[in-house]
Image (cartoon, rainbow, N blue to C red; front, side, top):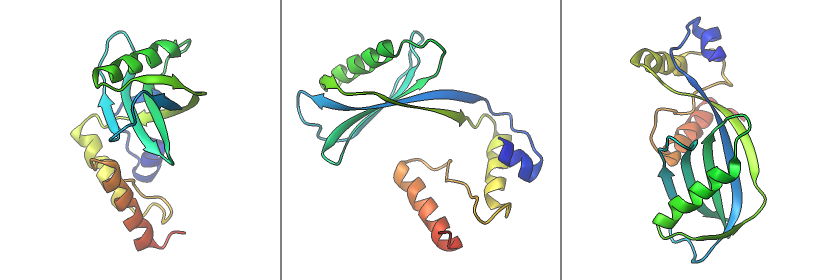
Length: 155
C-alpha cells in the first residue's frame, strides 16, 4: 500500500484482489425478514460474497466478485440466485445493475498485521486514519471511525 510505504518506508507482504461489486434492487417472492450475508467458495465462479438487505423500503442485492476481463456477469448472478434459493429466498426479478471496482488488500502475515497496526498509531496526517480494518462487523468499524472523527475534530 503506497500510503503505508510513504509513512513508514515499509513494504507489505499482502496480495491485492481486484473486486467487482455489483448491486441491484430486487423483488422477492416473500418479504425479507432479516438481512443476510453469505460467504461463498467455488472453483468455477468468482463470486465470494452475497449481501441481501432492506434499505429505504427497497430490497437490495450486493455481490462481491473477483474481477476478470471478459467476465460473464450473468453466470455470477445466476449462481447468487441459486445460492439464495438454498436459504428459501427466491428472487423474482432484479433491476439495472450498478458496478464498482475496488482494489482490496489482504492482510497476509503477522508482519503485515503489525505494520498496519503501527500505521494506525502514526501521526502521518491528522486527516488520515485507519478504518478499524481488523474489527469484525460493520457497526464496530463505524463506531471506531466515528470515535476517531470526534476525537480528532475532523470535519
